[in-house]
Length: 123
Image 1 (cartoon, rainbow, N blue to C red):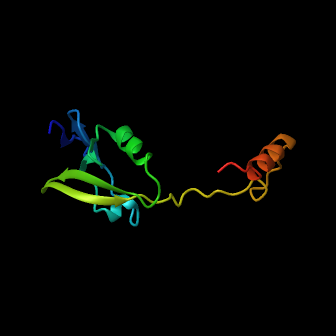
Image 2 (image 1 turned 180 degrees about the vertical axis):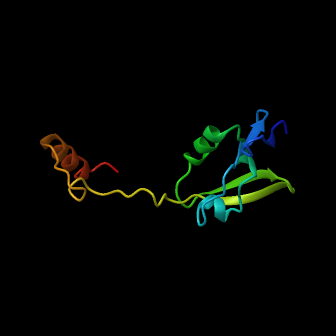
Image 3 (image 1 turned 90 degrees about the horizontal axis):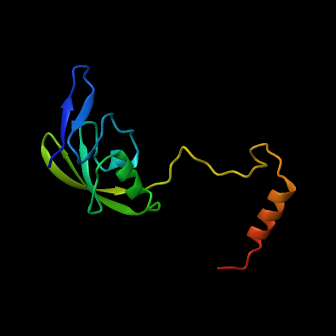
């Protein structure tokens, strides 16, 4: 592995190399990453058999999944290399509500679109 986690003079964690996604802050209790056992100082190096280069590549892999899917993660930390399973969950930070419930008025075009979409017979 060509990436290593370093601690610079300010105490912040950074990386040197070209592989891995460092977890630089404590994970949120109850989050999928927390439940998978990942925490600050860990370096995620593979997700579902795909090399993780950085945060963007990790996010791209997660975005191909739906809630309930499991992803096999390989990560390293000061005690070695480990494998774990992460179960993808919906984000509690997002809630889908209708425009009306959000206090917004629909335009005639939006109403037409909604009616056509909801009455569609395509399966």
